Length: 138
Image (cartoon, rainbow, N blue to C red; front, side):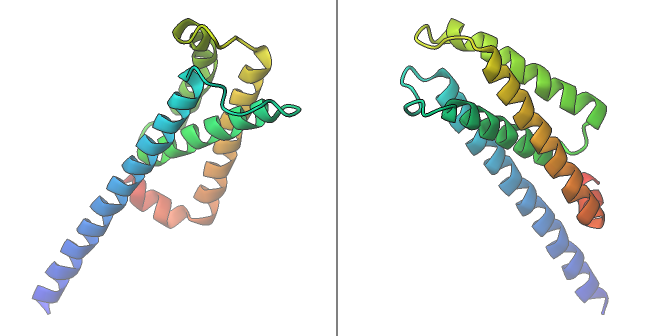
């Protein structure tokens, strides 16, 4: 019986490590794609009545959500303002890094809305999966 408990604990730890690695890979994939899209010299797609704003919203929602999955131990009062500051800073950096891109206040609004959507999604996940979220956070 004791050997079974040890194996169970070992498997549980292995699953936790594997899930963490998957979260980190998801984070790196999302952030790489967004940074490529933000700083690429080519337009992401033809602008069709605000589709650019939708892409900004989805990109920053993905960035904030994936970052929160990796940095679950960072206090929310610190994490979310940093994500909002990053949403603003990246829009200011975009024309400096890639001169063919331009600054837009509406892109900042879309970026911030994406971060807010990620915050809402994380809160909903915390509410519905509270026990599992605490296990991830340690």
